[in-house]
Image (cartoon, rainbow over all chains, first blue to last red; front, side):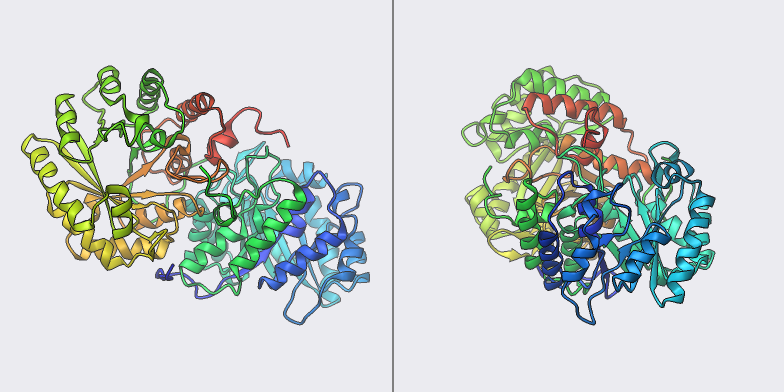
Length: 310
Length: 310
């Protein structure tokens, strides 16, 4: 297809690839470190430049990522490749620093219920927990991303007001984080809400140059929401190769926005991502083979041989 | 979720439901007329007001719709319900008129290759075939919709230039049709192309008040393209309950934009459709049971009991 631009969109979008961490942490079966390393290597070869590779969460909570040290020790390195790592607390930061990590992410919640369930803390307590982590990280010269989850809705609290998200997000950014990733963790948001949230953050001083969006396709809204976010000025988009992970639903349901579906749209819009779609699709098909089930990405399905049987 | 509007979008959208025709014509197994009648009845009860129910194509080509007369004879009728029927030629129009049909649709192609494969004619010949159908239909007081397919890309010709689509579409509208449905039959289009096409049609006199869009989710682009079309001024959107049909791909691939995924977005945007989403989801789950496989609609999957097992 010839690309056709759309007025009001950025010329370039940076994809923040979350498949190895956000995707694989939700796999029942633990993927061997060697397979993960090949996955990250192939993603980098496909042109992805920022790949969240793992998490220094305690292995008791996420055994799928217990091999963080091993994985980081074998990844290909180059000045243009960034491998942010999720860090839940000071102990995690110690491990990250001991392993030469230069970019970290912290993971907060816009709602009290999810903060308690995911972090076993109130929102206030979680921010208090993050403060020394970010302080120390900044002192060590690290780049810090803040995730805020449940930014549109929450399974227990329902609708999450924009003001509540802005309040939590602003406090996390005030810690000194460089980037804020807005996570519609359960995928219920729609383009108006996304736009309102981005505009409200801008009005409080968190401009689009510091924003990323993280959409889940649980209700099919991820790409439409991405389009709205791009139009609102966002230029960093989280996505997961092959649509891996992110959603505790059945095999037929989906989680993270598949990187391939995002790249298809951006390619069609003539927006530069640096990603080679064919290599990316091949990588996701290879990983789907390891996981033993087809990718939920529409693009991966459409471009896979044998999909044309009716 | 509370609705949040987005500037520049319409207040109201009319959904043109294509599941009973475009969906079921692609089913291998023939669905009994009684089941189809219940399907249409339930769709109407869910608030859909325009439902393309069947086609008067020769049963040799589409045996799935051979029961057109029987189906039309048993459908519930009310002044607010519209049941357009696809009519391929004059013989089909005769059957439609004999069965009291008041709204018809004709189905053309923007490309020569698909015109030959689908209609066994050149584009010129197909328009010549439609002319007497539309003339007669208008003389009988019927409302006529024109579908143009392959408006973004074609499996054989690749990219389909905007000017080519505008040329074919204008000629079909010049026959006297009231509405033009732009079909991205293979789902390759992206929001820039969709917007450019709508603007180019407007520049030649086919304004958005006469347009509908018909997107396929084969590459995951359908809802993002819909958002772009709404922003360009379109207020009629084709969709298929449960995402039925429309794509000759494997079970995991998808075809038409699922009506549920569309309604989720429009509900979230505060755009009135008149559709009761819960009733619609229940209808699609019921039909999925008849067809023996899960709906590809993300919303149907997410809202179905039992989907929360991991």
